[in-house]
Image (tube, rainbow, N blue to C red):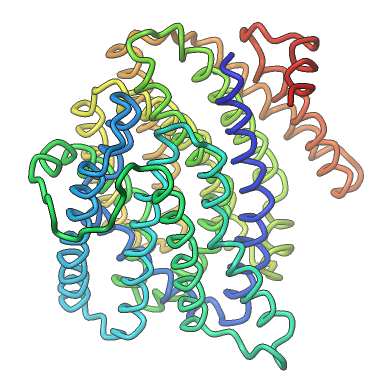
Length: 477
């Protein structure tokens, strides 16, 4: 087992588990509770529009740069300058496109839209700057930079939520402005690292712009667009095509927040796996154990979440949103059923990307994203957020099965079907534990303990790790 990889991965996950759940549940959730479902739903719809078109900000440049640095160890100034120049041009195109789509959609809240555009441009630039330390295997640097913006927002917005008389009242607009400030701080830190790491580093906008980068990264960009369309179009459509759409979008946002929170680990893990598999492909023996254990970690965790959501949806709704409406709790439960599929897509979709099998991955993304949008257009006017939840769960699960099948066929990755009853069994066991225990508080502690034990066992399964080796690694300086 590559010790450096997993040590750094654990550091990244731990740091993000310390910071981002606080951001999602103590900050973002509380902002929705304070501003209301309709106000937050309007923000959520506009944010989803900006995120759907986010692919125009990158067109796959970040993934291309990440893969090239990882596979060729090419981190020179010229490649970085070309990629950065391309992103600056794309930022202008992105801004015009978002305004055009907003105009034809009847959106007139241009002040909030401008702030969200600025936030997305900053986030895309930060992700690009972080790709260099990840690809060059400076994982700890990336882990630290990945939490700076959220930590900043937690401190500032947290003071406004809990001490409004001193820090001021929170609104959607100042919430977005604080997020922009946090992103700028993270960008400055990332630039300091790059200045120390890339020989002759300097920022030279529009110098060395290379169209070959666009053509090389276009399949990746299109794939990102269709994946994002599948997961974000429903939030925008809910407000756009039905009466009282802002409230329905707010209800869906409440459920999607949980899915997004639990999906965080998979997103981080995919970012680690892409350069790692690219570096070691086609030597499958070098990365197969890593891929297998990452899958165990993600899917076991997601099945535990699904079991809890299925057993106690009302508890989640009441705990997080102080609302006992069965409609909201049912939407939360159904949306979280998409989590196992998303976990599989992170693992095997990354494998397809890293092994240069983008064409089949792109075709699958196009088919399932269009299917998702068509079904949403047909059913959302009749069933609102409930329709969006069912469609998201169904399309993501079918998409995951297709990605797994083609990853096995195109890359030759070994895949035993025995994992299906194993994961289903874990989910069933946890469902029974949660439903039969006397107190919910004890359910949470018991589930967490058993889940941690099972995950640890499966994480090191077939890896050759022994307790002695683990002790030896932990004892190393």
